Image (cartoon, rainbow, N blue to C red; front, side, top):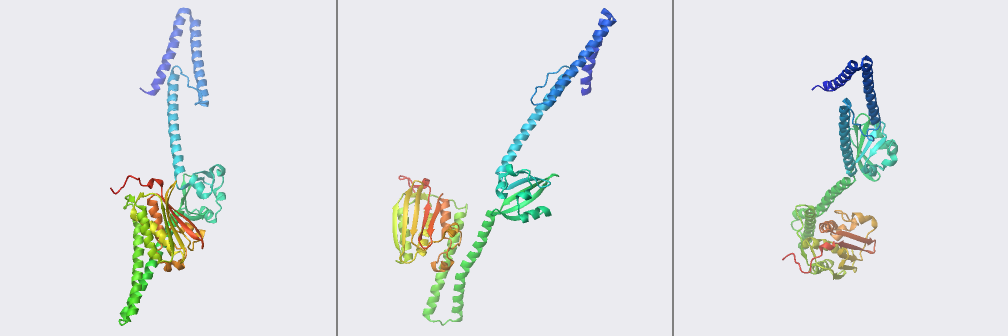
Length: 437
């Protein structure tokens, strides 16, 4: 039925009842009684409408604090519809609040910074990442102009010129930031910041790796090609000269082979295609074998000691052997003749560890953070003399990471160094279990 009819038909029936009652009173008690009854009924209806209008006005002033009246007549339907509207509104408000809470949680967890500004660059909201990147504080800086909070000439020029089609690369607070402004609505702008510090560092390491690897490979190739050209141009060289050339070419070829082998080892350690297959690692046998190898490398020029006071562990034997061997070989290469090198395998409350202590040349604290970078050398002038590939400590780092361990370094220039390969307690092998069986 038409909604208008639903309203007017009951209203007409109520009026008709008033007039019928007045007519009956007229017939029974006279005209005065009929008119009085009709007037009183109409006045009551008007008062009732005014009462419900008053209740409706009070409810509209405080729709959440007051309860809707039940109503009478047409007011029953009106209050019923208002109740449904209020219930739907409360449901929508709850959904909006839930979505807002989710949005804020997502913005808080977002690694990129988000700043919402109005059309005149006053700060309205920012997430924690933006606070870290730009040095803002939402509670303190809300309502302040962003260009007054971030006083960087490049940033201010970017804002003023309004060329937002390209992002701005900015160094701020020791961070490399990529900043982009996105117009939002008519009177809003969103400023997005991305921390590119780590990616810049990785990109720099990649460039350094390519440059260093090219340099390390070019040097032995130059030597080999040079001697081959000499042999081609002078086929009648003296036997002892030819033998010297062949010896140097073999050494340089071995150097290239070692370098490529270490590079392949690093690639394998970093690849997810080569998962670690744990086995029981017999520490005593491994360390004694390593000691024999480095004694050959030392050629009797150093004093060694080996102390084993720890358990066998579960891990990859070849990887751990490579890591421990690199630590000891480094100690041999950077310890002067007559120096002392101590190898210690011990158990601690936090887990087993392998300590290599030497009385070598050491290094200053400025080199500490870069020791495990590929091809990084503390003393580049000694790189050819030590015949290392520059990848040893990088291999150590990745082997320990695969075993849940860390590398600790202590050193003082001209006073020696202590390298500690720390492994977790969970790696200790059971006395009764051998993973090879």
